[in-house]
Length: 390
Image 1 (cartoon, rainbow, N blue to C red):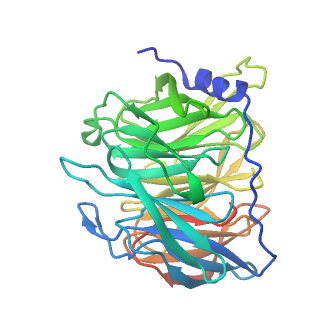
Image 2 (image 1 turned 45 degrees about the horizontal axis):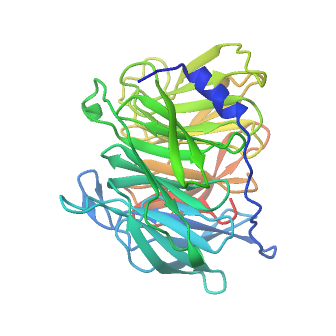
């Protein structure tokens, strides 16, 4: 299987054109921003799930305070969620083991803004076990999901009334690496580049990032190539692309670093790769990188670190895409599995999975620093946060 460098793959993502969805969320201006929280609902080896489904909350746009609105119809461990651009549908992976004769699933919900209800529509097989991530393609016609156990990704068509159809394409990853958690491929993320239209899949177990082309007519994910994400045993978990610069940032879970790769629009590379740690030199605590996000203004990047550390680390993005550390901030809980920046960029919500809280921080718009607002909301086993219209 042909391997290429990270920069070459990123050039491919930039070179190809795509059409963005024209669907928009039609909603009146209010003082509240609606968001959805994915949870674990059952005990697993790594978590004592206490949730009851997907939760609906609102955030006060002026203060950052959050309030409970509703809980979805009951489903098993809807850990990661995605909100459709139409604002009417929410999708969730059901992160569990379906057993020897079956698979886990992906669920579709209908969202009613009048009463904030999430009504079960249907569920389909994820064609794998413990799916941990999903996203919606640029056209709004497909859901893409990553199966952690089995190391595979799957394409699910969105059919009538927002329901999901059975999978139309399935791709199995290969390989492993030297870390005990890398005995096999473990797909951890799949999403479509906003401009190029190519699809990236990050595999923690294989130490690889895969590139696919999404054929919306044939309804297939077509394998293009993959590459090793150095160094060995880094354990790439999630990656993000800068909204304006030709730069990618890869969060390595197992070694607690962010890899930065830059390139030019003309595909003439000025190879500048930065590897920066989430921790200070000499910090011997074991890292466990979880989430990575870029501020809507493109000036700041944030990443969470779990394990013994339980922090959100803030970086300023330099002119050439390099990261300059701003500070590290306590998540005020245990296991900050995810965080999200509200669409206005004013606030960050941090989900502490193992202490059942969501904490609100205000973001300094000049420096990127996080400011404690004092708002902490109890939420059972929060895993993922997604805002409506984001």
